[in-house]
Image 1 (cartoon, rainbow, N blue to C red):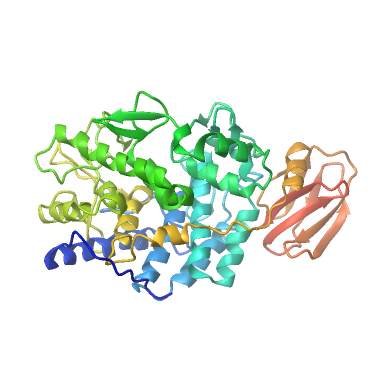
Image 2 (spheres, rainbow, N blue to C red):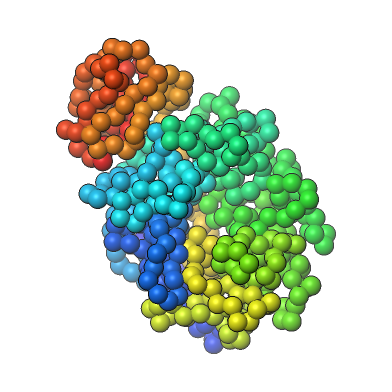
Length: 489
């Protein structure tokens, strides 16, 4: 796809030297994702600055990797982006000879997975937000590439997840953070509005065409307008939050801007996005030596291996350049701040490839060096720089995060699935076991195109042998009309 050009009259324009610096930071921010990409198309959670990599796959960073491919293609940095994106989408759908991603019965992925097998790593949870970041990125790639194969596998991924299962209570806006293997939500693992889980609410809302569904109710009760969300004030800047006593890390607002079209395209949300930027910058006046040092983000830290810093919650006084970049759509002067950090060697590190990059540093401890660069947090450096007028422009994300949700779902079938039957394991290589159904029961298995491939009667153990099926997504239909979806690996 050809690079998109936007011709704008600029109030702020960097010097030629500054522009060269920005070009370097932008190009090298993509190289981080190149270094995190694995041969199977998945992406590690992080890249070490030195030494042997040990971080597992992050399913959310795999999503960010997909969007990085769209940017790299639009900038003409690489010529095989479609091929790489397709390989990633095939692997996340279970179409890889050795990699079988660990998922719930209704499609949710582990946060972290083994780089070779897809098995659980680091005792990680089945995560709703990480799964929906991946889903958002797959739909982003579908919109951007307009490639039939990419569209097919993005749609297959969409069809394999029951998004409404993530919604707990539309009355209080609670969303499950984590899921059980059988696809049910974990009751003591909940989040309330507002946070980056707006992405989960957005995807779930658009997966349901029933106005009375939990997803639609939750969205209308809380997210349709920011008026309905909790807020907090810092230096006369009113900011969205999940309670009235503390602030959220700035990445929460940025993830919503880049991945949730309703946020990106709604004037009221954009006002709060700008307020978040102003509040972040204003808080740093308590510590300023240079006013270009600001940014409250997440990533490597000193007192803990990982921190999500926010206003009044930054014990190591860590500055996040990727947050400065992430706010560029509403703060073009951040471009100059990034150039000044670069020129003053603040937060400037060298990747194993020999390419310099900006990343987190501490004003408390000049000797602290982060061990790694974490992909999911680093992503807003790449995304924000992409929005600059001289790069892809401010319309790049609003264009491609405006997903077409005209995708195959069946609310009635899904309700039957959740109410009566469950299927495990999913994906599976040989046997699937059905619970919640009276035996014997007649069934038929169909491909996504509607072709009948297997018929039979459920045995006393509730098992079906699927070893003879090709690797793909299938629908298991019982004679009472109930439908279960599963993946044969």
